[in-house]
Image (cartoon, rainbow, N blue to C red):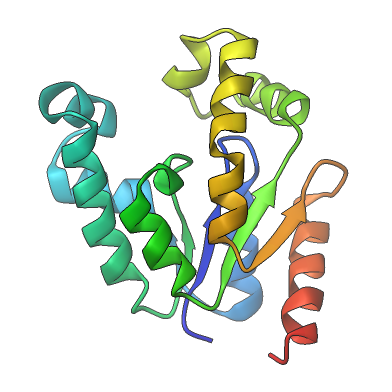
Length: 171
């Protein structure tokens, strides 16, 4: 397997599931946002404020193209699918997994996660966050080769389901 790329909205479980998958497949785990922040020498929020979304999406595309060449489990940022160029890259890759969650579920996960602060979620109403998710949903579905609903599954169960689906595809 080359790389396994996880996409989905914040709170869908990309980091948690990604680390478990990396362990299961004996691959490194890469948090794409952390790679970008390391490359740009500032937080993504600060970069957005200074240079705008277009500059960020260009950097994100460069990092995605590079990481796709590695053997790793890669957790992307929730907005990666908003760029047509990123969707094109994702669609060219054989292993892109959309971790899907109902808005009520990911809103609860976001609010209960005290370790990770998500400015996007804390600065917007629940309804605005739902609308943001819904505006991206078709892009997630378009970009993924596999979609797994994580609502009623533990992270371990998500890994088992994904492993089952990948093996059904001949891996």
